[in-house]
Length: 465
Image (cartoon, rainbow, N blue to C red; front, side, top):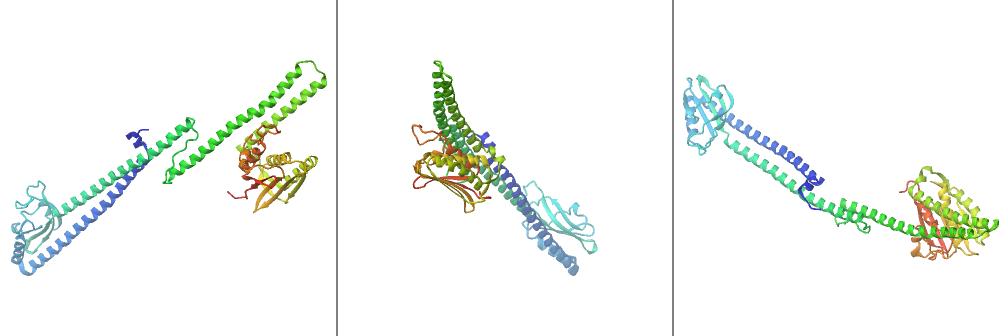
C-alpha cells in the first residue's frame, strides 16, 4: 500500500506522538513559565531593594546635611547621562522642580510609596525613536519642610530580559513540537511499513499460499513477537489443512472399499434366486461391513470430540488403577486365546481428573494394537504407576515395533504402515489415543521396547502448566 498523509494521520503511533508533543509542550510551557515568573519576580524584588536602599540613603543625607547636600548629590547622579538607568526628582514645597534627571513628576505617583509609570523617552536616549514609552519603577518619599523625593529606575533592562526569556520559551516549545511531529511521522512510517508487510503476507495466505510467513526482523520487539505467534498459527493451520487433505484421501479410500464390497455383494445376491441361507449369509456379511463403517465414523467422532474438548464438562475423578485392572481382566483372556503372554503391573490408587470412557477407549486401542501386531508366543504388558508425582500408563509388546522416523506420522488419522492397507483396521487407533491424551493434558511417547513397541502416556501433575 502507498504511504499517504491520511493513512499516516490515522496511525496510532502518529497520534500518540502528537499527544506526547502536546503534553510535552504544555509541560515545557509550564516549566518555562515558572522560570519566567521566578526570574522576573527576582528582578523586581532586586530593583525594589536597590531603590529602597537608595531612597533611604538620600533621606538620611537630607536629614543630616539639609537640602543643599541632597541637591548636590542629585546633581552628581544626574551627570551620569542617559545610560544611567536611575531616575531622580526633588520637588519643593510649592511643587517646583529643584533637582534630578526626571522631567516631570508623574501624576500616578501623587501618594507616598511604590509606583510604576510610563514617561516619554529623553531626547538623548539612544532608543528615542522607539514609539513605546519608558517604564519606570519608583519609590516616593515625603521629606520635612514639604519636599518630595522620587527615586526610580528604568525597566527597559527588565523588559529586554523578559522578551529574551519569552523568546527562549517560545523557541523551545516550537522546537519540541517540531521534533515530536517529526518523530511521529517517522514512527508512523515505520509502523505502516511493517503493517503493510504483514498485510501483504496475509493477503498471500488468503490467496491460498499457506506456506507464506510473516516477516520477522532481528529487533525482537512486540511486532516480531506477534509475527512469530502468527507464524506458529499459520504453521499449525498449514499442518491441519495438509492433514485434512490426507484424511479426505484416506476416508475416500477406506470407506469406498467396504461400500463397494457391500454393493457388489448385494448386487450379486440379487442377480438370481437364492435360498434363505444364502440371503442370510449375504445380509450378515453386509452387516459386518456396515459395522466396520460405523466403527470408523464413531472413531472419527470420538477424535473430533476429544480435540474439541466437548466432554471436558463431564470430568470426574478417575482411578486409573481400577481402570487398568478392568481392562487387564478383559484383554488377558483375549491374549490367552491368541497365544500371547499378558502381564499387568498396577500401582494402587493412581487417580486423575478426566473422562473415564475416553480413557478406557484410548487404553483399549493401545492394547488391541499391541495384540494385533504381536505374533503368537509374544508378550504384552500393561503398567499403571506414578513417576515423579505424575500418573503414567505404559503398554508394551514384543511385536515388530514402529521405526523411529514413522512414530510421529502414525499418530495422524488414517495413517497405516501397511502401504497396501490390506490388514484390518482404519488407522484411527493412535490418533484417538493422541486426541484423548491432549484433552487430558498428557504426553504420548512411542519408544523401542527391544523388541516391540512401548507406548507411554504421562499425565501432568496437578497445578503443572
